[in-house]
Length: 343
Image (cartoon, rainbow, N blue to C red):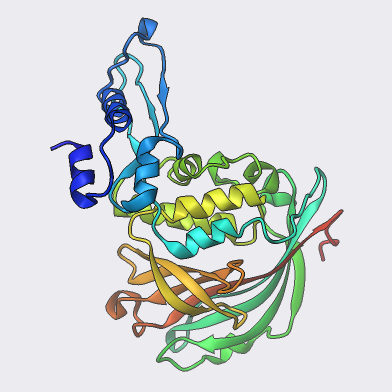
């Protein structure tokens, strides 16, 4: 049975056309490494775009039945076969809506030399080995990040104000957790930046990423293999491009459409961000952790609100199911010419 047969079996209303069959034959030839008439084994690229018959048929009635080829590169002679990266048909409606509405908000246009000023609120797990043994609690801060338009994060400046902590579910709040509450500090955001190129989140880099979902999907999986762990890391990469970061609407729309195609992503309904705002969330379980990572969107505008980590396995996370052990809230983004001095 061919892919076309399976597609027709899943949705009988999808027509089998000569153009569709020919497209499948070309893709099969690409995956098999057949280079056709390309002289000297030259590199060829095959791309199936949304306006082809297959994508049109899937959009018409067979969502979740097939996959779109993002890119297939013919290997050099003697080289191992490449991973064929496919983009499953996007099916998570919340992310599709966020993509459709990405251009609704006023666009920021920072220039080289300027800084994006991002205000946020965060909550994370804190651990301390005190006289009474290991203690855990939830550490909370207000953050203002001055992120440079271009370059590594060592030029960024971070101002933090310590907020009252919250107790770890089922544990008393240790006295040490209250130290520093209300204090504000301004310092360099990082002493070094050892991220790989594809993990950069500065505006100059993000604004050059693909504006099509297939290309953005491939970017999310850069350096990754296949399987649940790769899907979970791609989901985490998405968060790195949303939290304390800003990109143009075109790239943001492509990012949401690509994220909607990551296998295992689901809609979990109502969720509350670190600022207490209620939205609708999309989520993916992180293998081996007992926690799912959720991204929260405004239910009316579909603006990105924040992220949270929710317990799904009590024994692994050492907290009751449903507990929120991490959360963020992106409050505002603006442009400034320079950061404040470091104290």
